[in-house]
Image 1 (cartoon, helix red, strand yellow):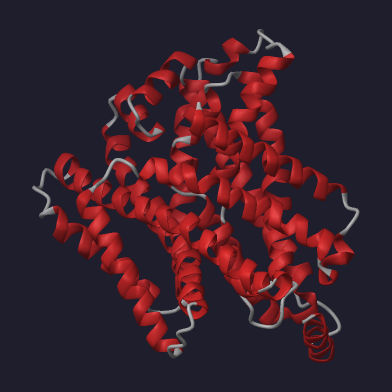
Image 2 (tube, rainbow, N blue to C red):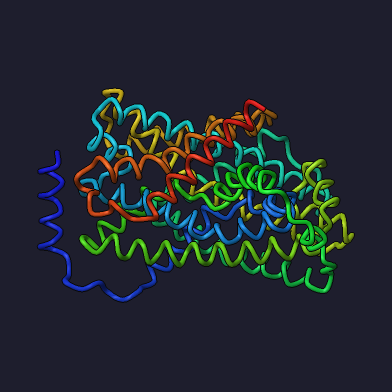
Length: 426
């Protein structure tokens, strides 16, 4: 198997240009696509979740945000790049760790991402129904019809192919960035210190560590775009050959810099406007920061814009997670022994996704948050621990051994998983 991987690398060496080409439009599209998958509906709850711990934990989390997200996603990208040409994450796991491990990881990968897709289906239906009713004063159509039309519309984009999905997501990023910037700047005149009131109180080391321990998973998953990493790495290897790792790292670093700067500006603008008590009230009411701010200021502009921003955020995250969920489902079908043609496989996966997402969105169950939390440790294990384990064990990744970032990623992964398991059992 390693000989096969080496022969692929040799073909790339022969075919790839000797120098990496300059940055191009496709690189920008991928950068915005990664941003679009990561920055979604969770961003609208991040100011509440991250701000409740007080000023100093928030500052530490802000400093850790870029290295946590960049090194972890770079590790997963390198892992996929280490496989043979065209191999996605499920095939690379099988190539490096064997058929049984490949089947297990494929199963876990699917069940970690697919529930999030269901959550976005429910959230999208709720957002549009609420917008029609409260902002446009139109009686929404029956929930079954509304959810079917919305999900079918998103799957129509999916049917245009992976590049169309990434392009659509990159285009949807622009209004979302503008909206976040607008809201963050709009709040500046209303800054009253907010969370700074807690800056004079430095928590005891044990309390600080406990707060950070429970808050790190929130930060990790607010910037998580692991479902699209496999498709991203495969495309980079096809385009750049032996230069794929270098260009992938450049795209990831720019995408994460954009994520961190944009989101932290938005977070700090919110927490400087609202007091810790108000953030706690928003959490108790289970509202996004947009909904709470609209009520807080009684501002019709925010009240009208909030659901539109949420619609864009959820739609682009749905598309990004669909890539990962469909990849996992295709892997499960192939590993079951059935080998339908590529077009037939695409149709089967799309039909399954449409039916299940439609049923769940129509039923509107309240247990989806629990499913997402259960999927959290699996995503953390795949994103943080599996690539670091591969660096130690897989010859194709031996060149990445001995880097300090490996220790950092492993430590953050263990912290995130232990905190998530603690929250489930507490």
